[in-house]
Amino acid sequence: MKKSYFLLGVLLVILAIPLFGVTPVTAAEKTEFPCTEELIANLDPGTWTYPNGNIHIRGMIQLFRETGPDPRIVGDNTVVVNANWQSDWTGPIWGTFSFVTDEGGLWEGTWAGQMTEAGAVYNGSGNGYGMYAGMKMWVDMNYGVCTITVLEH
Image 1: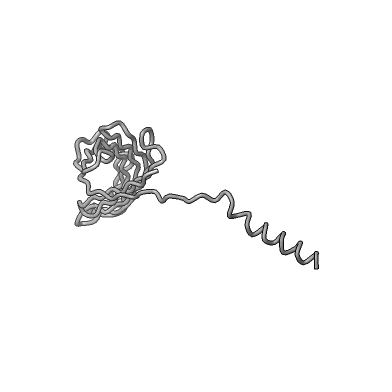
Image 2 (image 1 turned 30 degrees about the vertical axis):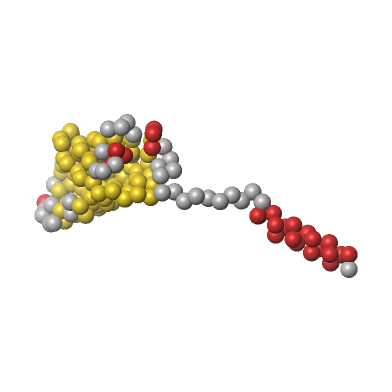
């Protein structure tokens, strides 16, 4: 009988161990903002080739001005553009971005999508640095309608 009480006690201790040291976790806040994106300059045309009548772009660098209702999404965005377009200028696009906000924060990441006859559709994601360290952001562009989502620490 003592043996069964002992085993029951050990079992209860084993089951109770995970309960200690567990603290509640607060969910990170995710906020979505409308944004606008304006091409300011073509900084470097990159390399353009035309295999079989198609259009390939590698390393084109463009500067965009991003604006929105939150200071974390207002600033200058340097974008590297790559593309494999058909002769009608449609096809996949992808690249990287380095977005310096007016308040001195930095977002860096990658993006990818499609250029269609109606315009660009792409998604991007990036990490925050400096004052945004530990934060994440997502960019969704859908035919000129831009949304940026920021995930707090």
